[in-house]
Length: 481
Image 1 (cartoon, rainbow, N blue to C red):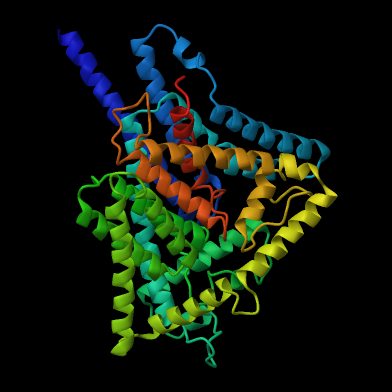
Image 2: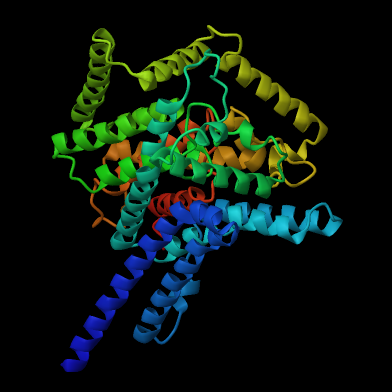
């Protein structure tokens, strides 16, 4: 009897250890870039995978104690998503080996590509094999904690930067932040700016940028903040993912609690001032609410948020309470709206048409990119130029059109099945309805919508989370585990 009790206690400890390691691995995804900046080294990008390796070792040790063989480990049928992931891995490897063989890139650049695109497969493999309710909850908690850490720095800095910025069009509107720092006593804003300068210098070192690299980014000058992570779009994504994680662990019937959570995160996205993130988050929340039972409540939630935000802005504007921050924010909003609706010299439609035309010209010279992609990176001689304002064209170039459409079809059909049948997993019915769909659908819609502007899915901190989601989609589409 004592032996059985000890075994049960040992198993419980191993499960708690596994969940803790999974939470820590996701937190390390969020903090990898800040650690890279602090240590001025790319090595912290490996920290999440080191923690995940410990979770692997913990689970395998636990199974070894309870089983005499590993037949379960090697005998499972590949589902359709598994096959796409295998093709993804083969493409990465093939591009790397060919370019390394012909001498176009060195081992260091190949290593960068593998860490960015190949290592995230470890998260897919882990959850493909060890998918449980507690494990997925650990990922949600990890995202929520990681998002909170990102918010602690990014939101105050976004407000302080715009508040301290000069009004557009003024004589000193283009003064560099570094010059302004030398004219005042040390403040919280200046301490935060020191990180921005360090982050910009680190990014410049990683991409071999010139002396003007820092001035061309949001790290120096301007009115908007890049936040804690490598870009403003990735920082905003972690804020939004925190929102999906927060509402995922709150039961849907607690309507006003959900409203408070969503409103709080939306206000933070407004403060961070990345309009694509705001639009993508609203669309994501709308899709989360499209199901038979709760669509009316979520529709009311969206409308209430929009009405509240509009009334608050009108009151502030009417009574002249708008400070420098709100005035600058309003000017930026007008510029963005004019671009969207074609009322400026460079409209969004013009940018899309120009980028598609560039893509067509590019693949005309190298048609194989249409099928096999450009190698998922920027280092190969045939890699399509990255970093534009039209992300989905870059995604077509990275993945190749066949793989892109296969992945999109899998995601759309999965969401359709959930919306239509109001269920998610057939073999994992113990999973709460509010947990997986809210978190997964929210992130999927957010990433896809964001791709209309910037591609955020290739980010080192986001791709592993998407791999976890793809493993869930594969499991829900197949009864073979």
